[in-house]
Amino acid sequence: MDRFLPLLALSLLTACGDAAAPETARLRDPAIMGALSEPLLSDPDLVGASRNATMLSGGGLAEGGVPLFGPDANEAARARDEAAGLIGGNIPPAPNGASGAKVSSVARAVTAGGVAAALPFAAKCAGSLDYSFIWAARLPATLPVYPRAHAQEAAGSDAAGCRLRVVNFRTPVAVSDVIDFYHASAARAGLLPRVARIGTDLAVSGANGSVSFAVHARKLADGVTEVDLVTQG
Image 1 (cartoon, helix red, strand yellow):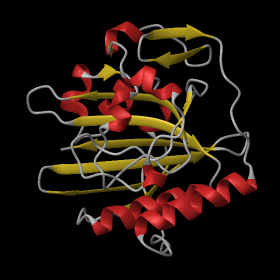
Image 2: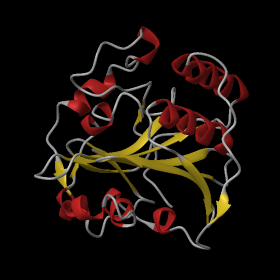
Image 3: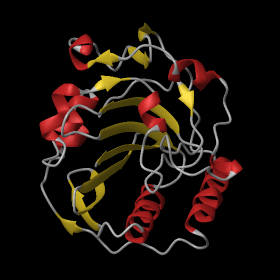
Image 4: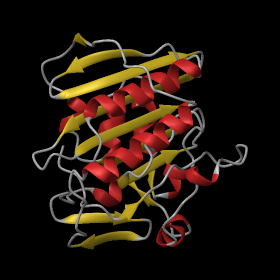
């Protein structure tokens, strides 16, 4: 999926109202604080916007882009170390994924609303999404943005019957590192995670009661890993 060029570097973001997080999980880049306080955009505001030429801030669409990190080995190692710290030690490898659909509707989506619409558990709330990086900060504490990732887009909805969060980010770690982390995090939260290969994506998803999640990760041509993280409930 073509995504906005990165706007902000995110450290681990925790859900509002949850217990205080370790210092390594706090925001490092003060620039994000401005985005978190800006107005929200609704999905219709994005109609016709190309992700090849735009990037999203909390206040609107801006032309141009910001250079992205490359697949830097040192940065990847630091990110993996921080991820392991959140799990409490070494992250066990996720099981091999079963083969699913040949094409990933998530990877082909061009907005967060399209990503949500492609997932059955999120589709009913896709039309009520607001766009702002504040929604990345409102992810469940058990399923945060991967440490040291660069957020491309964030959206969410707390409309009646919805508690939806959709975040797209990029990271220098491997696709398998991302899936291992979210599989372990979801298992600790009792979300019964399962892994599948869906088109070009390696995905992990799960649910327990009213809470559902999905993570789709894919390697881009420049070697960076792109991730769509979606939670509901």
